[in-house]
Image (spheres, rainbow, N blue to C red):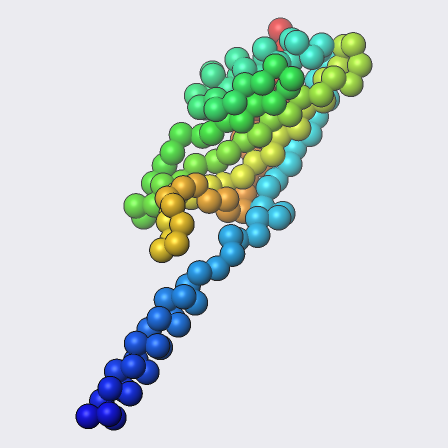
Length: 146
């Protein structure tokens, strides 16, 4: 009888250690983002309005629109094998001179998920494509030029 109790107790300890072992720190996302930069030949205010217009035309969801020069926009959500995915674009505008504005776009891929010890939410993954950020910059340049 004591052999069975000690075996059951050992089994419970093994299970509890394996469950506790599932807890881990958040994934280090350093270096996951791709970055594009350009200088636009237009005043800051005109560039800000052009970025807002291009994001709307290309049907991105604008989450943050800060007059100090920061946009956070998301691509439409898509599913791949039932897991929701999207891309996050952080666009920072900085005046270089009276007639020039620097634009920096940081691209991150995100997946929606949950672990046993976290709330559901969007988690950053490594971005693979710079093409969309380049298209945003090209759209802003075209809108400002004409």
